[in-house]
Image 1: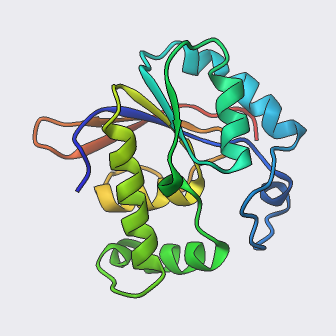
Image 2: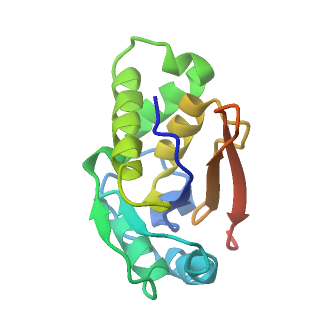
Length: 180
């Protein structure tokens, strides 16, 4: 399923849509001022990590977050299209299905889960440890597919370290969450 390599995950900073809790399709919007502040707050955590490559979603909010948090890192960066966020309809269906989402042949949830698997594997094929800067839906689907015992909903600019246990199972540990 996923390449068994440790990596770091960072959700993008806050946007106006995140702030209002809107369920509109917000496919390519920028961070708001608070989101930029969140990224600056978590930057010291990110620069202390042994990151060798940074991979991110091509959406503005992820790219803006990546630029802020990796300003002092001199490592390769790459955009991965399969790290693009799902729309709110897929998010709602995916979170309603829970663990069943990974077994469902129902489209578009099943397709999104396959997209996430491709995106994460593409990132993990880079020199690691890798930092992945993406979205809440990517994180939720990834945790579901990994069967990781971890809070699947992640706050804006939440950082998580994913490792592989000796038995092959995934482990996730929160590294930091700036003020919301």
